[in-house]
Amino acid sequence: QGLFTVTMLAHLGTIGLCLLGVNPPALAEQYPYLGLGMSGSGRNNPAFNAGESDNLSFTLRGSLPLGEFFAVKSSVFVGQYSVQAAPTATLTVPLQPQINGYVGVGYSFAVASRGERNNNNVLGNTAAPVAIGGVEFFPGSSSALYIDVMFSPTGFEGRHEAASLNMGWGMRF
Image 1: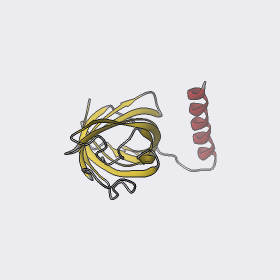
Image 2: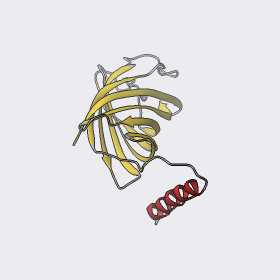
Image 3: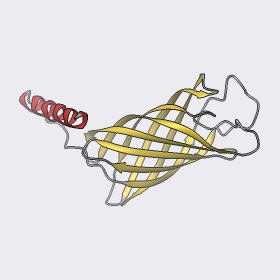
């Protein structure tokens, strides 16, 4: 019922824009893709600055559309000292042909850590909720480019915020 409501609101918004003489962009063209990129964080753990920190990490990204406006985007951040996963559910909005904006929510999990138990990753060092916002671009017939920001209000020690800037390139399938 929630998906039906969102779909109806999107269509009513498009009709309203047409009645006002505004040409809305084409419906979002979403494509599944697997990507590889980089992720960076400008902040380290403010509560416990000991231990190793991954302020830069490789990012593995998968995106799987679920209908016209929704997708699951999962990211895995692989650093020198830790690995963290963050699956998210996103709402996709068309910005231009071949360009989509998206916002969503999810949860990050500390998957592995070398040495100390609480090594810091780009999204913190504990399991925590995350928010995501970004843009994806589909140039050509088989590529996907993405850039987004993930924010976790309790990523460090369960009480301090963490944020990362993520970007990469993917292959559509």
